[in-house]
Image (cartoon, rainbow, N blue to C red; front, top):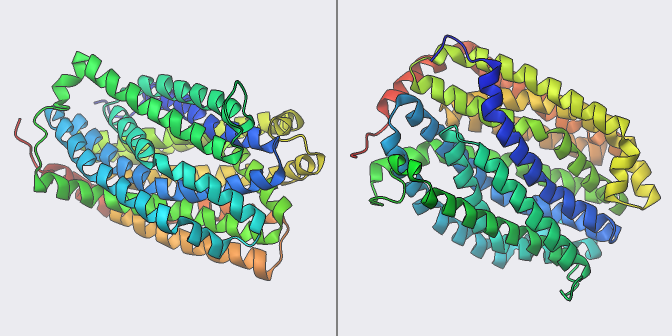
Length: 454
């Protein structure tokens, strides 16, 4: 381990994840693009149904980030034979957890949506989307667990390949199932949801086949002696559950944001769904760099060098902001062409172009805050990251409610609220890191990780 982390090392970890996330986010983009050519009601309903589903999925994604932190710490400490046990215990937890969440959402999901959505047409379509999409929750959780393993052991290229395959499957089934081509039934918004479920199922199958086929993964102890140890599960839950709750709160607050937008009108909701997709497009590089800062900080602490944490954060923040600005410039330059991918309805296109300045500005501040936040998570202090998320979420929801219901802002200014969230997270994370007390705690936590017999 050198005295610093080079940009090339950051890029080697982040680049395959960025490519993978470009592919993975094309799932949402393709759904939005296909539905945008269907009608405005379906487009707006997919936003609400999709964000509601994503809120639930963040419980699994957050748990997988906790897995990634532990695996990267073990990998940095050279304890690779124990990684398989962590992965096994993650499966012991995530599979029944997915089953419970599916049961709860299947029984109460539509009731929850009916309490929040005003328009009957949007409510009906959102319910159709959510019911089908939630059926694939286990596949989505398993995709996140597989990705956490490969990021944790710094073998991220396979993520790019499999997510590209996942997108290809999704696009094909979108075309077949939404409009009913090649003899398939025309399922409309349900077809978009089913296409995503099928693409995730294919991805899980390929991940498992890859691990079985590669002899190199045997050194990690994967699928060997899958015995249960309470100490391992306790450590996993202690690290992963706060991250899981944090991710749920983060996207759950975004769901509330869309509920507030729905009260502004069906067109504002449809415009915001396209805006959400553009926002995701601008942030495509962020997810790779966020995974990189998380993994590199965990790895550095595992190697006994927590002093590298702040230099790593600084370099990755610089790269992140530069990449978002490049994406924003590209989107602004080809705004009309990009919007035409999503919709051929003139009013929607013009309104979406109108909110793009707010989307770009919010993306920059969100990116900076997210890197700082993932630095805190990477130190293993996930309870602190949860407190930061609670604090930022409360401010975000309060400002969003005031903007829509009291100040009566237009949709252009309402989208600036996401930037306020990013600034809040960044200030809170930097305040905690500047204190310095986390450094000793991170080192001692690394030493206390429960050993595993190999």
